[in-house]
Image (cartoon, rainbow, N blue to C red; front, side, top):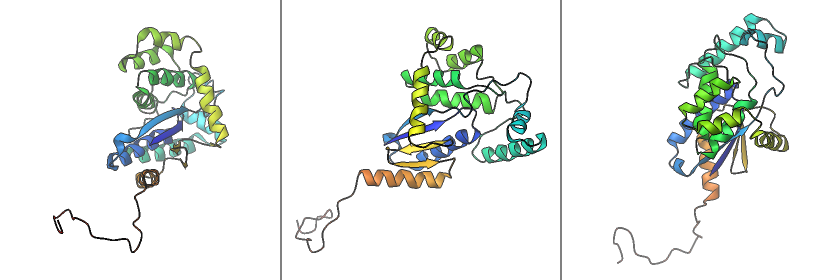
Amino acid sequence: MKIEIWSDIVCPFCYIGKRRLENALAQFPHAEAVEIQWRSFELDPEANPEPGVSQYQRLAAKYGNTEAWARQMSANMTQMAAAEGLAFDFDRAVPANTFRAHRLVHLADRYGKQDAAKERLFKAYLEEGKDINDVATLARLAAELELPAAEVGQVLNSDEFAQDVRHDEYQARQIGVRGVPYFVFDDKYAVSGAQPTELFLEVLEKVWEEARPQPVQLAGTEGAACGLDGSNC
């Protein structure tokens, strides 16, 4: 089973959705047969945050509301994340453009570390207050993931993987993605948003069963047979 997930690194619901899907997979008996592919999505491709402007000030300006409103909304989000074992800290969050970080995730995919890179970047932004558009910061995070330093430097100081990011975003437009996280199961079923763990588990079971249907015995076709308990044989 393949699950494609469109997300942005500065999206708190994306991190919550990731954790809820993982909790569902922990209960799914066929988790080892599930492949997860992360797809790039930029909530604000033109983002160029002004240094010194807090996350609260940015949200207030974006939605035409007060900073107090932004703080309350962020507090609610923090509480939701805590229920999933995440420790959001919006007081330390550094608003950033995510294009460079998305390209780093594509490099990590080359080495089978895409999911680990996504996890590390989510945590860096939402919990640790790191600037995920800063080249030096991204290089340190990549080193933690044991990605080749030379390739990391090449990617961070060029436009390598830019087309891969743009292709993911093109695919998102083609299938009508309007917000993230957005999960697509086996190119057949889509789930939008950080849905409850129980719903993810239901979808996993449904997709698995539909791809591997159990045979239905026709009525009136039961005949003599050997039983597992040794009966009749």
